[in-house]
Image (cartoon, rainbow, N blue to C red; front, side, top):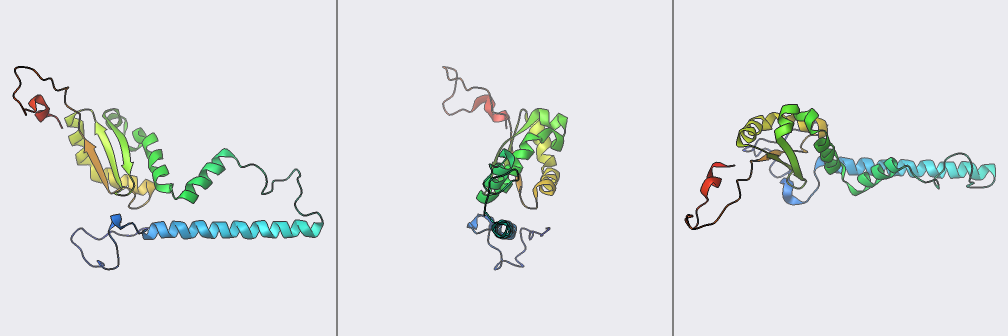
Amino acid sequence: MSTEEPAPGDDGNAGARKPPGAGEPSGVDLARVALRAAKEQARARGDAARQKKQARRGGGLRSGARADGRDPMALGAAINRLITERGWEAPAAVGGVMGRWPQIVGEDLAKHCVPQRYDEDERVLSVACDSTAWATQLRLLAPALVARLNEDLGHGTVRVIKVNGPGGPARRYGPLRAPGSTGPGDTYG
């Protein structure tokens, strides 16, 4: 499923496409909802056919050695069902990326840059770096990293990587400070 986003200045389909913050689901989201509904309908048809077949044998639903709809679900299956019912596929996928961050960006970069949070509405991944040098390096690598993440997660899942540099040292106030001065914090970030 590869759809191309229009260029920032391109107004080719301006009336057909809503901005990402408009609250309406996109084409990919609509496709996921339709797929989920089709799966549920197929599952319901299968359950109905199984019940009809068992009723013909005489006895309806019976407890026995074989699995039926009354059996408890495995934990993984229950979690996957909950994720699809609630529409949490993208946040769960991004959470998986955060778990395997070193394999995606490389060991050196992962030692100095850590993903903090993902904003699903704006599709922004925030990353904290421990020095301004690594923050600059990550800003240079951000377009390639966004492309790699979108290959892994699906097109348009991450639009921007927001890079946060280190926080400055604690600001000490004393008699030799000028009021309103940011001090050495000016060189950080």
